[in-house]
Length: 167
Ligand SMILES: [Zn+2]
Image (tube, rainbow, N blue to C red; front, side, top):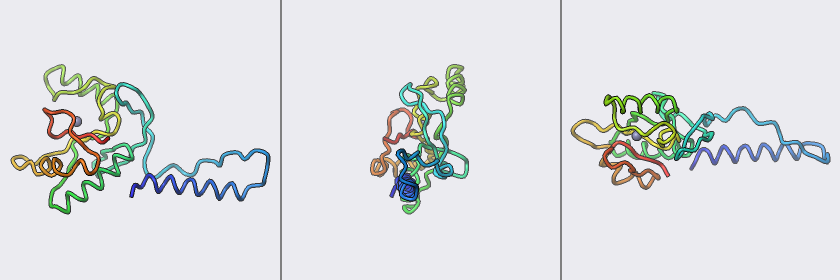
C-alpha cells in the first residue's frame, strides 16, 4: 500500500467532511489546507532538464530523501531485501541543484565519479538511488538485479552498478 495514497485519501475525506458541515452558501471556499503533509516536504526538483516542485520524504537515518512514490517503493524493496538477508544502504538519493553542481565540478576536475550536469541528473528528481555494495560480495547488486524491477527500480547507467532509478 502506498502511504501517499492513504494520505491523499485522508485529505479528500477531510475536505468532504468540511464541505458538508459548512453552510450552503453560493460558493464553498476550498477548505484551508490541513497541517503540512507528514509524508514529506516540497523541494526544487529537476527531471530531464525541467525544473519542478517535488515532494520528498526521508528514507533513512542519514537524511537521504526520495520523491514520495519512489520513497515508498524503496522502503518496501529494502524491507524485502532485509528479509532475504541483504542490506540496501544508500550512498546518495535526492540531490539539490547545488549538490549536483558540486559533484559535476569535481568530475570535471578529475576528482569525482561521472556526474551529469546540474539540472540533468535524475538524483535531482528524487527518483535515483546509489546503493552501496559490500566490497567483494555485491550482495545488494545481485539481489536488486533479481528483484528491483518488482518495485519499479531499474538500472539506467551501465558503468554504474550502484545507480538505480524508479519509474
Ligand atoms: Zn547515481
